[in-house]
Amino acid sequence: MARLRRNKNRAPEPVRSRGRRAPIIELNDVTKVYPGGHMALDRVSLSIGRGEFVFLVGPTGCGKSTLIKTLIRELDVTDGTVRIAGRDIGQMPDKKIPQLRRNIGTVFQDFKLLPNRTVYDNVAYALQVIGASRAEIREQVPATLRLVGLSTKLHNFPDQLSGGEQQRVAVARAFVNHPPLMLADEPSGNLDPVTSIGIMQLLYRINKTGTTVVVVTHDREMVDNMRRRVVELYEGRVVRDEVSGGYTEESTTEFGMRMQAEMGVGANGERKTNGHGHSLAR
Ligand SMILES: Nc1ncnc2c1ncn2[C@@H]1O[C@H](COP(=O)(O)OP(=O)(O)OP(=O)(O)O)[C@@H](O)[C@H]1O
Ligand SMILES: [Mg+2]
Image (tube, rainbow, N blue to C red; front, top):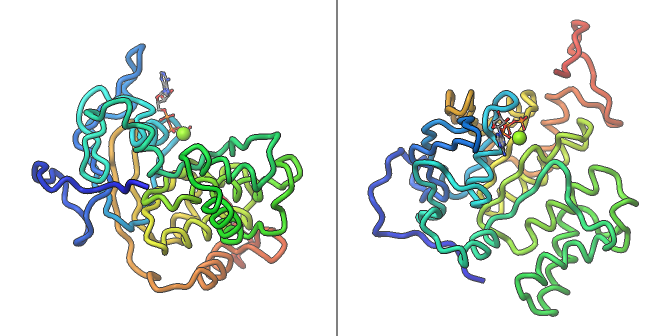
């Protein structure tokens, strides 16, 4: 499979990249005005390095999903440039867009699984459409379903799964070809706290394999506890971009246990109080 490559001849970066990692996402003065005149993104500049884990937050309607859609050219921007791995995707011929999207795994709040196909077939389908061989499919599909903890559900249909399990299938489908970039738009929006932590733990594990992960979420507590970079939008503008240090060497299990402890989530999913009678849930 073709991998995203950096274009070494491009213009100097307008935005400081983090550390020495080559940016995989670069937005330069991106503005998006929807037909009808609403400005959903207002001169957004942003640089995300390879291997980063970034939260995208902000109030409803601030432009998070719009930004995500511009990264896969589901939406064309009105002004400014979006570069993925150094390539200006606004200049990409239409016929190259499927290849761009093959390199970007996407997960949305509504899992968008094929209802008449089994778990196995939902994930296999993602490889079939990119022309993977049968041998590759036979190897990669079970391995990815093991990674997301669904080895025992291969032959279930989506309506025979819990919401959290369905979202795990969606993550497996997005990750089965090991894309260098994963975008998740409110992947745990409909899930209970324990299941949400499970999904974050999975994205954390995927990030540890080297994949850059960008997650849109409303869960402030999750964001606070994960201590990763946070980009906040407000009315289409970046109003905060903070890198939070710490916990980079945690194993996935340590991460999951710490998240459960810090978020006050018990073994069966209930939220505990913080000892002062206040619920920790927001
Ligand atoms: N197709 C569209 N046509 C016109 N306006 C749109 C369209 N899609 C989104 N908008 C508007 O653009 C703004 C940003 O929408 P967007 O979906 O990016 O917000 P969001 O931050 O993802 O919100 P939420 O947290 O509710 O998902 C909103 O005011 C929305 O109404
Ligand atoms: Mg949205």
